[in-house]
Image 1 (tube, rainbow, N blue to C red):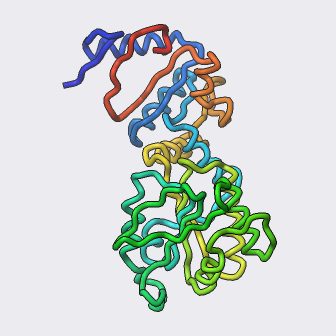
Image 2 (image 1 turned 90 degrees about the vertical axis):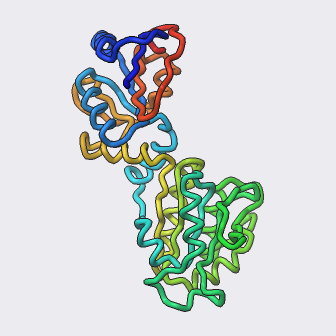
Image 3 (image 1 turned 135 degrees about the vertical axis):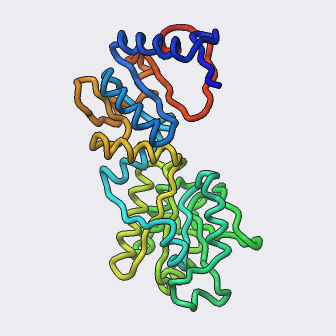
Length: 296
């Protein structure tokens, strides 16, 4: 049974929908936060077009970083299935969302059936993790531990920059730990894959990673596997792209879609007082909050 509220009072769904429609109709700058599936996203974008709203994901910062990698820089990526079947070396870049830890455990417990049979003396994938000494890597099978590539307390972007520089034979102020093992492993690898996410990785680090992958492809083959910070969020970004030509952080204020990742950052718009109505569209239950103003 569907339950709806106006303020803190339960009411009929039809009455709540009519009340929300009236608020949307009178709003001058409505904004939408999405946390839903493809069907919810499609409906939300259609509604945003009708009322002139801007829309973003509830985890907009991470999704925006991931989208910017493809819209601004470009990336070499593969699918999870190809990673399972071909990757003989796996490099975890930074910390991955918990939802992807099981996938990493599966990779560490299996060997690629489409790769050369001589993976290593132990007949298993080699696993590395790039990050600081405090980086928490996903748990591997059989008690294995990923080899850490680190520059101490340096950030992920700086570590990737040092790793890229050392790979190209340049000197760095602080060498990357275990680099010699990493270089030997890559030299013998048939298809190394770098796992990355925008969840805890800044945009510059994502760009530096793609630069490293590009360098590796000058002599051999390597690629990246994008593991979304939010699977719903990335699905919404793809749905937005095929519907409007743009990813999330798009607005219809002038009657047509405009993409601006700063201007239509919904969290920023709310904090700056630019929006006068905030609509959350979620596939999970959202409890009503005490009404303070039209933003509640």
